[in-house]
Length: 503
Image (tube, rainbow, N blue to C red; front, side, top):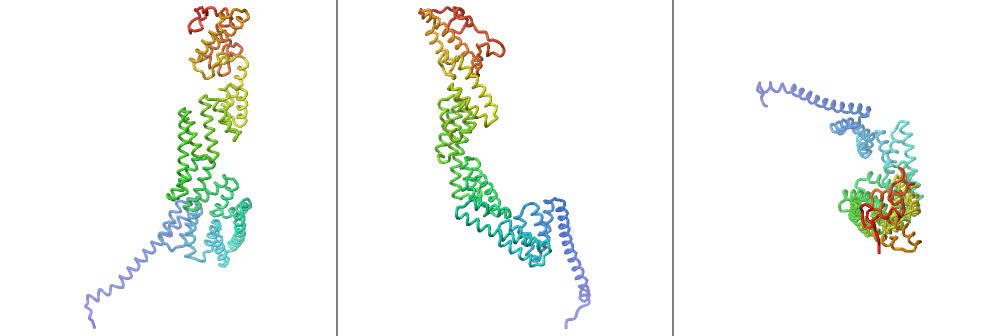
């Protein structure tokens, strides 16, 4: 038998007291920890009630981290997620609640509702049936029965929709899918099926809407982005097509379909952007060449062919190449009769070719579809020019185009002045006719070599006609007839002090 020394015996007598102290300290730690979790839960509850969801979520995060086995923290965090519209985050929390407390009917009912919205009908029905077997409240029982009945109906609708889709009866399939998606808003498969139906029916706007939802509802949904990109491409929206295919490649850089499509869209987009820059720089000939390249790059999508021709029509019209512009603009209008831009550009081209009545028709057609002030101004200008053409046209008198430079005008004038000078004619009637012709030639030269007078004439106003002058008559030296010409030099630009005779 071991004999204890007095000192040892004394030390052992203190052991019960030490154990009691340790136990009290441990209880304090647990109590402090519990109090901290309860404080987080209570504060989160208050913030949730006040609508401060982000702050409430922070407290419920802390409660869950502090005690991962406390189902209340998960349930309240799931409630916040649902209030924030984050059902994907709420679902795992509700599942954890049910794992920790299988008889928590409210959590199971909420999970069933989420699963139903996702289109996971079998899992949703399982939750609703378990709710009915767990002595629920009358409200919970009524809701579970209603949702179970709804789920059964949706099962039948899904079967019909798939059957219609497989038989290519897309309209009937859409009718069923509409009813399904009213309840199962987050059902990706049904949205993708309905999008395909819309594509087959040619309702691309609706297809885009469903595919955009599908791309958000399912992670890494590369196929949805690829389809979105191809739809936008075929609609002629190369910029949106490029955006969507880039999203696909962000998720999977090696996606074969997306990468191949990306190269085509990027090439076309670059060509179109380059052509538009050339137009901004007023390099219209280069822009025409670039848009001709666009048509070679994508000859199979009508929208790009039409767009390229519309822009070529514009370039030729602005570049004063009316004769070339008219047939190109007409091609565009044959496919799209209400294309306001093509109507405006063809009208301007008609004006350049002095086909005023045709220009008026195009401006009037454009006006029916647009309130653009340029159309109104163009129409008024065309009407003035038509009226003017029925009187005196200085360009026709000299036989030059409206785009003629001053050098061409002077050359034409000198040639005609020599030809029609009255001294060349002996017969009184011929001389009288020549005098009138000579005056017209001289007046045409005066107007068309003076920038201000020419500008007025180009806008439908005759600067030598007193009736067309809003501010009174414009004085010119030819009103006195041939007599006032006797000192006029037809080959100079100075005062009329040189008597001309032609032998």
